[in-house]
Amino acid sequence: MTAFNWQAFESAEPSPGHEALARIAQKYPSFCLITQNIDNLHEHPNALVPRAQYLPVHGRLGKFRCATASSAQNACPVTDFDVRLLATPESNHPGIETPLQLSAPPKCTMCNSFLLPEALLFDEDYDADVWERANRWLSESTSIVFVGSSNSVGLTQHATHLAKEKYIPLFNFNLSSAALEVPNALSPVFHVIGPAAVTLPSFATRLGIT
Ligand SMILES: [Zn+2]
Image (cartoon, rainbow, N blue to C red; front, side, top):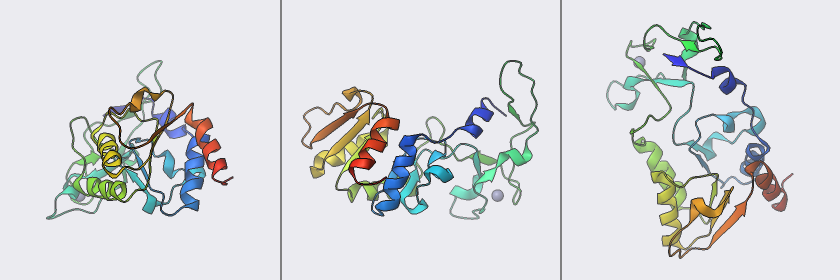
């Protein structure tokens, strides 16, 4: 197993946009953040969104769980396992940052089953509990805000559909309005165009949050 650019991932810092979202979440307990990102930056101390308001629907990079964890029977409680505990870093790819090198797929330290990445893989479906929680949050929303979304995955399209059905406003923070063209939209759609690192802090300031 090799993961390139591991050091870049490890040293990534939240942007002012992440920090603004954290301030908004901390001020408004009803604010819920669903993210497609797997970089864990909303868990960074400088941009911490309370766990009860945060749902990384596509999982989290660098974390592993026991393969039995998704089965109802004989489920092993090993989650958030840090695979680096098993790794031997070797710089055997000149010009590329030190890869994380494992000689064999990692195994659970409790039951010896394989460990699976917490991050969703291509063609994997959403976890049923995650989908149920995201759907409940969206169904209870009085407005939905997209930030930098391509609106090309099942959950964002579901959110757009719900907003139209409930006639609640949709806000699109993005570099262009193209990602959220909603044909025959019934709900109001507001585009806030620009880098999220600029527009989100400005939005927080407008809410009186500094
Ligand atoms: Zn296990």
